[in-house]
Amino acid sequence: MRGRRGARGAAFSLFAFQDILTTTIGVVLLILLVLALNISFTTITDVVSKSQDQHPLSAMDEDQLARQIELKSRILGSIDSSNSVKEELAQLDKETRQFLDELESLLEATQLDAQQAAQQASQAMSELESLDAQLAAKWDELAQLADAAKLEAAESEEMEELKRLRGEQGRLEAELNGALANNSLVYIKQQGGKKKPLLVEITRDTILVHSKGISEGMPMIELSHVDIDERCESAVELIRQLCADEKSYPLLVVSPEGGEPVDTGYQECPLAFSSPGSKLEILLRKQGFNIGVYPIEAGIHTADKPLLPEGVAP
Figure (tube, rainbow, N blue to C red):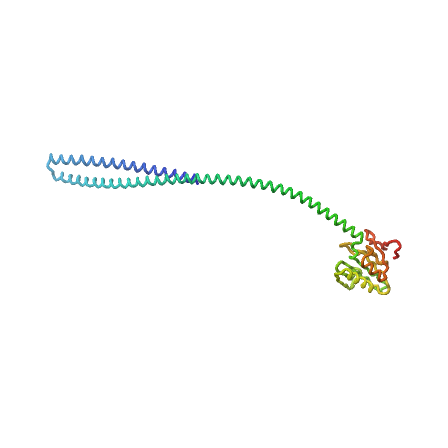
């Protein structure tokens, strides 16, 4: 912007100078021409006057005098025209000077605006440098926070892994201690074609009686109870009805979480529990069932005969 204004101001100054110089030269030449014409006209007038005084005018002299008078009139007209042009040139010179004054004022104002713009630009640059410094400090702070967050995340992952391992340990201990006794499976052994194999699945929320792959076309019975005592009593009643008076011995085992029902080969054996003393075991004992404890350790569920504690007859 400043360069353009400077170039424009320089162009204006050069144009004005050339215009003034040309006008001045024209005025000088016009004045010289007028002076020369005046001198010539005066000389001619003097010569004519002297000739008239010395010699009487002839017809030819009269014609020549008339032409000279006409020439004088033309010269006077030219002088008037030159005076008019001179006045116009003076007015033009005045206007030119006014224009130059205005142009000079404009240039001064432009320089002042340029100085103010430079000051504003300098101030903006200082503010930008300050903002850059603040931004760099924020980036450093963010990097420190990111490092701290990574450290905290690593510690958090270690804590989560530790919690998971502890939870897994607790779950395994609960399984080994029979804490899942209320999530049980009951198999009813088929006795000489009189009974069909059924699966009674006792969970924390429901009791399901279904085939579960033991045989096809078996009905499914779902008993939903909120109260654990009612759930156990319903299971006892269901088992009692299935066994009837023949007292065939179903096998009660614990199903690992997410696993399949335990395969014991459907051998006849007493009712077995993963943990003694559960509510269901007590109720079944009252119904006259022979109760035994069936361990839930790896590798024993696929045996041809279930492993029972010493003294418990199959």
